[in-house]
Image (cartoon, one colour):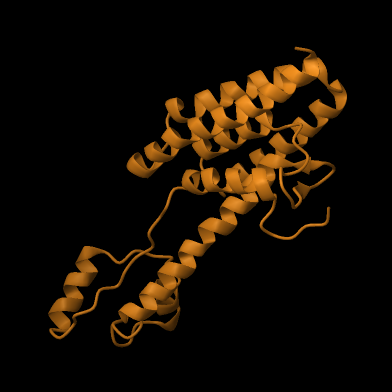
Length: 218
């Protein structure tokens, strides 16, 4: 087996292994709403191993520059609060694993800055997919009668905030409503927070096959 055949075999292996490693991270995030080292460390180690092979077999300067660019953007988004440290480390692992991936397997394109980037496309797709839950919950709230069940005289901005699922309705407030409105039979639902790792896993598969969910120039 020559070097090219080995790299092709490793590319298939690392993709399958990445998916297998993402699955327990998703379950941990869903159950505990946080990620410890057992979730992100294996993915990060896989990325470091993949990057080491890339540096040994590819253009060193181009690979390093692309990696630094992507890690800098991921770090900036972490500082802006787009996701948590555990999610960031998983994305770093995906970045290192797929630093040489420039196009999806079937069709479509990857998000491009100076170079096509797999991990940033995964993040973009994950945010698009997760935003669908907000629309779903908003529709659920509208059907539940949450707007009409607001307290009389409640400020308009507060009602809009409630409908946009930006604030939770506490048990004490619900109890006061029940005392004030004995006929109240509907419940105001709050935002159902689904951990981002779940969407990263789905987005990983989508990006691998089809690239960005937003149409991009090739």
